[in-house]
Image (tube, rainbow, N blue to C red; front, side):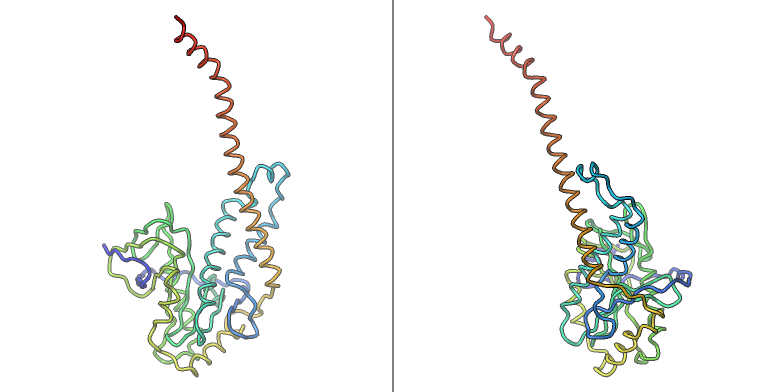
Amino acid sequence: MINATLGNGVHAGDSEPAPVVLAVPAVSMLPCSDPSPATGRFAGQSLVEELLRQQEDRAPRSRLARTLGLSPLDANGLAWLRAVQAEMVVGEILARLPEGYSVFHSLPIRNTAFWVDHLIVGPGGIFALSSKTRWDHDLTGSVRTIPVGDHTMPYLRDARFESTQITALLAGAMPATAVVQPMIVLVNPHKIRLNRKPDVVTVIDSPRLRRWLVGRPRQFSAEQQATLTAVIDDPTTWHTPVRTSAPDHLHARFTALEQEVSAAGVRRTTFTVLAAALGASLLAIVTLPVIVSAVQYLAAP
């Protein structure tokens, strides 16, 4: 059993067969930080678009439901919300990379049902990052899967598949020996324990991601980085046509939804506390005469 504290980067191997390749409709391309024709899209935007689309299909909450603090999201919607928040956390970290790095988000992988959450091109190589969250306990599992609750998820296999596909897409611009390096970024986890020596996929915690990326030894020249960035920034590399949305409007709608969820939680907590206080008061009112009678009885000569 390997007990590896996340942060310095833990590699996790995967020998499962590649996922079935599926043709899917165009998904938005989301470059983030460099001046380019596709800038302005934010980390997690494709998930935001889907979450908001799902919300349009839901009936609005009644006035009573809003008063009682019923969440505007069901369990599935809350899972999507957490996924968006994880991508945004990683996006904020990547936005703080020093000059010389190009960062892209939510790139759809041609002819598959997959997209890469974050793609980074820097002096130390090209990295495909998958953001994951909800790991507030130690992880214990095999190098093929990662346990989430009572289920095991093939995140390691998927990360390896995605990097292989992206390497093939960029082959014409990639240096001869270079490959896209797959990574899984766990947002604020504890530790991960794997049951044999890992390899291939780098698993790292979000607080140490920036330092890890900056610390990679130089692999690309400035000219090679520029060539790769230009290919990645070309929408035809991923899907054609690229679906466009208004990022500011989407971000504002998502922020409003986040605030609704938070406000509903505060209302539920308030009603819970008030209900407990009311219950305690009613109990005191009911039991007070009994207590008084008992005291009087005991005090009687």
